[in-house]
Image: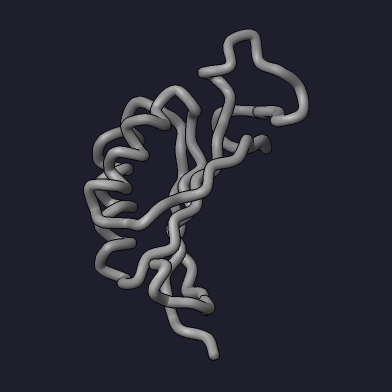
Length: 104
């Protein structure tokens, strides 16, 4: 049996990862997944396949599954307010279904 949850996806610069992780944890999320990311957007092309001159300037994709839409909205809003004026980034939410809802 599956249960409804909300996934927050944040794609941004690795240099702000610690601050984003702090926002996620303070919102009450039980965890997150972070992986290297690359692609093309308004700020040009970022490659995940080639090492950057400085690793902190590479991109990262962070996924958080939350038990409530309110927690997901809080995380997305706080990350955008704290960082997206000065750093590249995008956040989106997805409704997902999960097994073992007690994990979230």
